[in-house]
Length: 424
Image 1 (tube, helix red, strand yellow):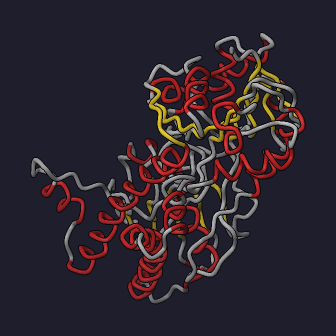
Image 2 (cartoon, one colour):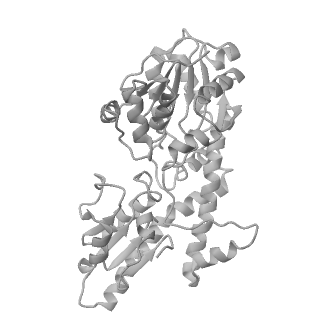
Image 3 (cartoon, one colour):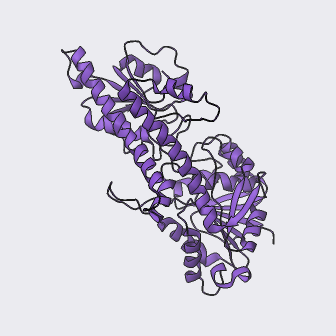
């Protein structure tokens, strides 16, 4: 059965590029999002996020009539759900519990327009069992249809999980080239999902079951989180022992079987800083190493803030006529990784905000990939260019290794520098 109309629910950093790729292959695509601004922007042939090449693809798809956006689901042959999966509020001492409310809302939204033969794929990164839970919600809403948990291969509706595995800034290319893990609730669910993705995916579509597909994405990012935690813990140890951690890692990596990652101010984004908690929340007594890695990486921003406070104190000792209100601090980088505008779960932004909250003077934020600070930014924060920050700052806190910062050859010698990335 071919897929003539495809609906993508959630038009964010994953959903919109996915919708655009299907539309670029001349499939009719209906994008669904609760954000009216996003819908209006897309229908103008424009994009509301920053992702290289995506603007041209969306413009062409909308202009040619293959992509439309709406706030309400419509009849389609396949539905891809790419909505957020955040965590419920909790105390710092508690293990975060996943919040599947957005997935449930998306399931309830598409349920009325489902018809026999449709395929529903959950792309949202989710705890193990979320795909089965989504299928239950759909079955509750549509008792006139059968689902895999009820009828197996003979189900009216096919359900699968296919996690995204792309890197922000390279999403368009990686959506096409990367292998995809396809986890159907039945063999037929998997086969039909492969047929759908092969519309544009050139990488291999590897079939497994839904639970293993869910765990595969979580495992990939938990593995990276543990590796980063080792590097970050080394940076703490080396700071105490007065050792250059970047030189140390470079030396250790000369061993043919060692590949230590680079430390930083923490771990951010919507994947590595989040996905390991899905594993910990399901098996808290067993996921000891994964849990510890999360704690190491989550504590790094606080360590950086303390380093800044010490730098301010030392600056005042050397300049006894000044007060803390006279000390000008510039934070270089707010995004969660280099050369993008994405501030989600960004340790750099958290550090900059924490410094601004405790420092009695204007904070200078340097983020070349955004045009204005987020609404939650501190009142004493000011977005400035690199040159201006160099002119006014006494202390520079390098938080993200953006290309613009790597290319700085004229960093003032008078600056007190806290370099969390080792590029200055």
